[in-house]
Length: 566
Image: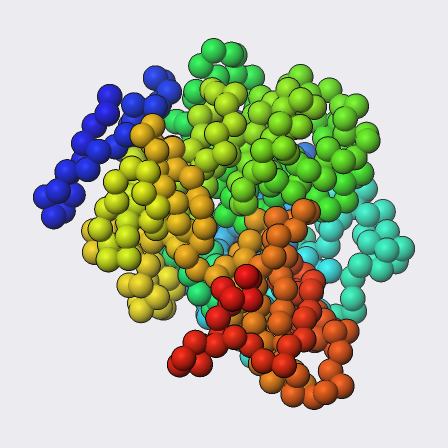
């Protein structure tokens, strides 16, 4: 089964991973069934009309409901005069409005710009301006952030929704608690904004002009730091996402090779839908399979999360190492019935062996680790779903994916040698939005994406990451870039210069440490932390501040972060 591929230069390269594939999984994906994600949605809603597509806080949305409501959103967006390809931002956690807005945008022929709801005004302004977003859907808890940057962007249409807006009568109580008791909604004022209900009401009176979409059209601008600290939009086409969804479905088959697949799969969706992992694995693959996605709005509320877990018959649970760990440290979690849990998927950050072993012992389900990036839609490799072995690796390239380990000069390295992990496949992005130089820097002439991660492949085709070529810091599965932290620090008048590095952290894998040289002798740790809190979302903020008289530098004056990591 070990085949050979011929590359553009004529050279032949082994694909050792194919010999390790499950028998039921093909080496290549078949031609795509759909032209666009919008078509996938429409066909799934037709096929699984009476099934529940998404639920949140006990409120269910069937596939039939999803089709009706996304059509209303799409028709409303078209009525604004937005043209095919225009960008619309979505700034919401895992609430029912999120998939309705996202798929409504896609059905209108527009491009989704996913935004982390916890972004500061500085971070939000950069993303909206860079994407040229014309409209935004936002949860009211974060409307104040939008209000602060609106005039500096091209956004002309704002839809503000509340946590309880799609929860029926229960929603009134939810909103009361969120606004008045917990006081989680800072005051805001955005004239001419619409509520989500108004959008659905106005859209109901209009007809949707079905756009002509092809696989090459842009579905998402998924913002990432890439290999540098400046956030840029990875251009993900409809074909990219449909291909990755299909690759995952084929890989998933092995999980049910020897055991019966439930008639309806229940996915627990705790990872945020604005993150590419949940978007593709939960939402897209789930929809394609007619699955039910149970949305968790706030996975940090572990007791509340455990309560939701206990009510659901969970079959598939994508998560992060930190989330698995936090759940196991909750006494109530250990008492749950895990007999329905078929699969736990680990991504976003390395799964630690002690966590995986403890999870298996507690739940009877092993954590299957995979690897990917925003630039690869995201999954590029995964361990076998039919194997209980914890390999400590990122697994095998999934169907139609090629992985090559290359040296600094772009030459392929033999098995076992450490180099940069490079990926080629139908899920690799079309490039970075409006950044041809950045795109050229990460794409090789023969179509591989250079990940910036260093690793080696063994003789069975399993790849292990050993280091990062870039200085990126990985905090609970989120990329943090030192350049951005240092740029924010430089905005403080008391800071002469600074350097950010990642240091090991038992909870989040890594955390940010900032070395600071003072310009103002009175500058304190509290000053620096308060300044960073105002300009950086929580996971990017330095937890440790160390003041130095000077920072180590190269002969040309470049700060040597590696010496600080020491």
